[in-house]
Length: 475
Image 1 (cartoon, rainbow, N blue to C red):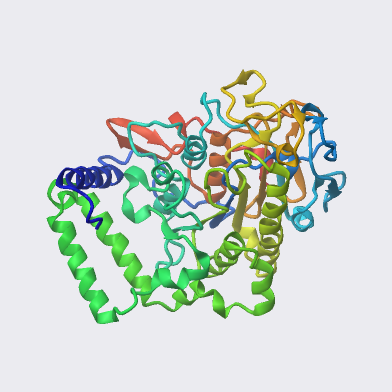
Image 2 (image 1 turned 135 degrees about the vertical axis):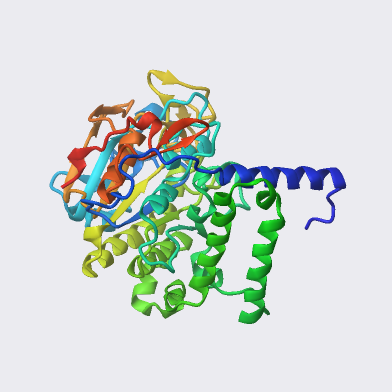
């Protein structure tokens, strides 16, 4: 506890925490879906791994390169479409940007989408677009919308009863827009037991399933008993529903079961053979991919691995776009390619869907989209006098790239197209977020009319239940 808080601040924070707990665990009064019990039927996937490129990954600098223009002092910015040379991939006629050669060599196992279009929500904020991508709902909402991983955890349950159904790797809440990020890292009204099991640092994954230092198993068990007593005597216990109380208890029981299981060894990356470990060891994201593979082997249901969103770092290239991406590509190229290879060699890729995505793209000149420009957020000069201005800095929502592998996704397939000249916007087969969500749910066998009654109205996996799977992406 922060001893600097005064009484008023403490009560305010305590009240906020209580209300958040009540809201996040809102009772499900009536189950409306007529397809309940059929989830998982006729599925092509059992597990989903989301590789999240947090911060806005420029499509023209990664998986949809355009004409390369090398840097020259005092060059015109509008001339620059890509700041990297491009190289051929395993697919005939398809090139990726320099630095992504390893991923390019596994594209015969997956699908490249070059036409994802992010939502037009006015002034662009990363946290709002990330909320939209992960929940399929535009903020703000009157109810806490569940994360995609929570829908999957709720509808399908754990694949292995001792492995958390929804695991989130790599995102800390001690940097940047912490509260905004927490808003979509939740199960919302579905209840706490379907929320994410957080592993901020994959290299310390084992610590996530061990009692704190100095606490033996007997003391930990006693703490578990006290936790249940605390729930019963808390505002949730007094004012919440039976569903809320039981959800909180089950979430703790699941953690306790994992602690005592042999599967907990999957969290210990020190047991990985050195040759394999070294390929993945490009940083926290690379080790997150390794942990995701190990957890998939043990029966995880949904795993998110993120490069982590922190303002002005990672893919959030408000300056030094070119040099920043050189480093980002080193972090992701080898580990992602190796993850696909490993899953394939272990016979897991056919039933594991791997999705690589970002909240939106970037462009050097256009903020938003050509027909819906928004307030400029970057001081990008028309003449590039310094290398730090060389790269894609503005937020671009009209043409984004995604990758999908396994779990019923077509192999060696390319979907959609963007223009080769600025603005490099989507010109064929636009894909929006409700289509992505329903494609994933369809592969998992979750019916499109899955819904619950919240605030006396149906709440669907996609807004109004209108999302349609992009069947062209599926085998």
